[in-house]
Length: 408
Image (tube, rainbow, N blue to C red):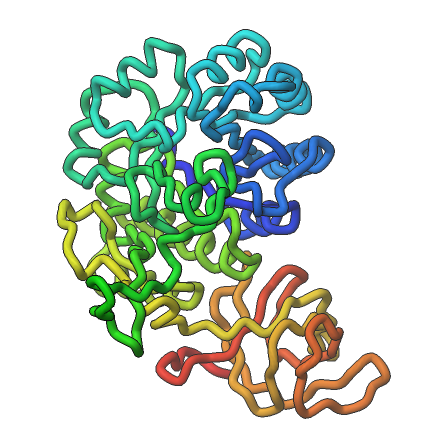
């Protein structure tokens, strides 16, 4: 059996390349049209061509989302778009519309067709129907639990893709019209305003019944499936999908690398104990934007899975910069500053080949060779002494007070 695929999101070329460098087997992205994330930077045709060539050079794959809910006015140019994606070597498209899937099979025969989670598939009969239609993969709804995933996987032969990390929707598989109603931005045609994450004051008539200090939010916690990865591998799931086409470069790097290491360790050892799972949970917490939970995977759905008014709690990371170059003789790294840090801070480097190495920041200077005590100019290039080998594309963050691993 093939090893399970780790599938990562990207909103632009930089993020897509980061996902591949940090261990993703495939990357999914949206074009300028026909995608559900119109506010992402997204890719024009030449960008898609570039990232497809880049990915294929690493023996990785590129999937393009064509997953909006199409109205007649949206269909203009779809055939030509699919033909162009096929011509430049895209490995698969992700679709909600079976009409678009049919067009792809006819006019873009070299691409696989993956059925989107937007179709809300929660049972094996529907998966089999999609297979008979010609689907090469089915992305299950995020509302199925782990036991249901195992049952479906036993009953079907078409590859299954399952979400393991990232944002959840307050409505069923993203089928929400709050944004349409409140902002005239169609959530199912790429314009979701994420109205469920707004803060609301709730009234009974003229009486305020929500807290003044903590207005109500309908947002759910993010998904985190670390406790279920081993079962998914054993069940024969084909692909593990990370959500987050609006996320930062740092988020993509940290989440992809964490799941990459976890998957590889499961294949190596066959089983992870609770301490190892807790370790990976801690690693993922360094990239959290919101509190996380196992979503529907446990089969439970109660008040503990919602944020209500707590958005942002529990975030632990302090990302401070990118490594652009490194001199092994002087041990000085050229660092692109992203957030404030100072001399004597304890810092941590992680990257595709560096695994959470700590050091104390004892020396840094600017390109005029002037000593610097506080780095606080975003995008400034500084030289920082790092007493171990690092490489371009590695990232640096501050060490949390609770996090004391090996220091130099």
